[in-house]
Each structure stands twice: as C-alpha cells, then as structure tokens.
Length: 139
Image (cartoon, rainbow, N blue to C red; front, side, top):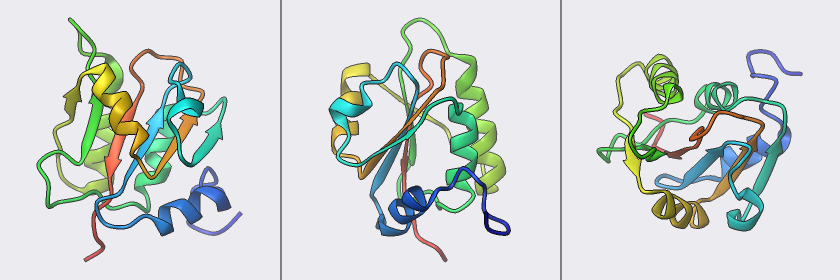
C-alpha cells in the first residue's frame, strides 16, 4: 500500500497507465465482456465493480481534452443503463468537468477494444458496464 494511491491500482495497472501515451485507450469491462479474446494487455480484477476501477484509474489518468468524446460506452439498444449516469458522475468528479459519453455500437466497441492499449476486466455484473477511456496529457 502506498499513501494517496487507490489500493486497486496494482503495480501491473500502474505500469500500464504510466506506459500509455497521449491518445492511447484503455477499456474497463464488465464480467460478460470477451476481454481475453480482445485484449493485447489484460488486467483481471474479478469481484471489483467497474465504477470502483473507473474511479481508481481516473485518480491518475487524465482524459484527452483534444477530442470531443474521450469516453465511450457500448450502446444499449432501447435503453440507457443506470451505470452510464454513474460513469458520468465519476468522470465529472475526477476531471472537474462534465464529459458526455459517446455511445457506440456493440460490435464497433469490440473492434475498438482490440486496438486499445489494455483491457481491465472487472467483476461488474450489470449489463453494459463497459467504458473506453482515451488518455490525455498532464498540463
């Protein structure tokens, strides 16, 4: 344990966050997501919900302010899952600004995840508990 670091930020995850460059993306996925199939680098956090991981990651990772949508979720046909509002609340709290989520088609989300720098597979059991974050710069 280290002072001021969220205990969910393991050495492996810290290394990934540090190695990411501006514009690189990281996926935080739910338990149903095919993370092993799509991930180039995979961190498994079973039993931890996606919102806790999002909070930990955003405590260190700046979101890209050069793009309109530095955060994307998997589109849920015909509904807006409650977890989306939770994601937005966490992002606003950590970034000190509101950032609208980009909803993208399920298969486009999978394709984009294949090009992500890393995937963090969580134990999130709520459907559509997946989010892609684009790393920004530290000013």
